[in-house]
Image (cartoon, rainbow, N blue to C red; front, top):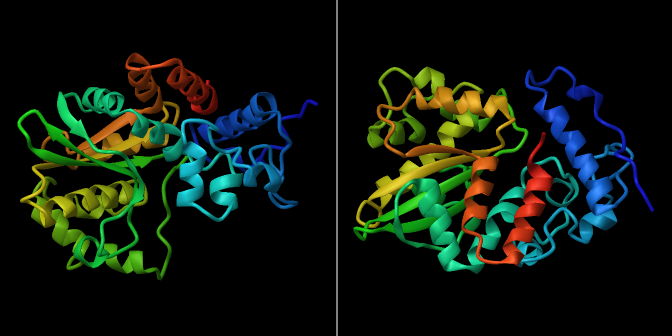
Length: 305
């Protein structure tokens, strides 16, 4: 049986100058229909081509079926929500699909992270998904978390932490009027600005810019990494905040480039990486046909042409 791509959301038109959101929705709709050979539609109100049916979502079809990914997903997200299991366009499932298999081979994970960080490492710990340090009151005291997190040891024996934020079609995040976040980012005495001042890596005078819609979430995730470093100077020598996004997402490319201009020195504490480059690195070091098969899936699933 063959399935069509299904309806596409008309509201995508004009939302993004690069048209990446519209292209990515169509891409996911085609992947569902042609690669997975599944029907579309979570509900009557969410009947677009990028949605799996509740039955197929519950079966885990939003995840790569091998290398322990689905098992890890069910453990981390035991409830079959539309956001994680049903919507193929959202980014919540991507950290598991894209990063979890690296936990199956310590040498492979070490090679990949040494390459993407641009330095030879001695160890890279297993990757944790949706990680936030605890208790949060000792860090940013909010709900900020990393999509993925790991720790490493360099050749001199120094420990480092790597917080990873994974994006797909995301654009600017609007600040909700009256929210706790609005109050906190506009309070120069808040923990955000205390961490910002204490870490000493920002140029003076950029405080009003980092809290704007284009940069605020990037800034908060970066501050979370820096807050861990400040809290544990005896444990960590350095921290890296890494943002991973597809090359076609022009908004994220522009936002990350703009954000880098707020930093006093490009010392590797904030890095960006495209899906395309990440997959190239993983393919270069791939240890077996099982990983080659997984990488082919990622290429077909997420690279929008």
